Length: 98
Image (tube, rainbow, N blue to C red; front, side, top):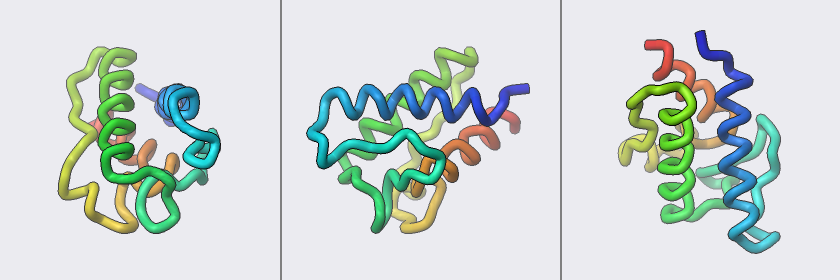
């Protein structure tokens, strides 16, 4: 069974990649409570899509899966699965274990 900590670590890897290619003002903190999307998030829609595609790719590569993380309908929800590292990792874990 895949652990939440493993999923969070992959999200943190994508945060590192994001931070290395963006300005300091657009940096994301590697913390479970970091907001990614929504009103408190620091990613615009293109940044969010890029971030989610990268997370999806790394998750599928790490666990040998073919799950889809990016969903346009979830992207428009203000307090949805993409809001924070916490909510995103919970969503991914649910998808991996379903």
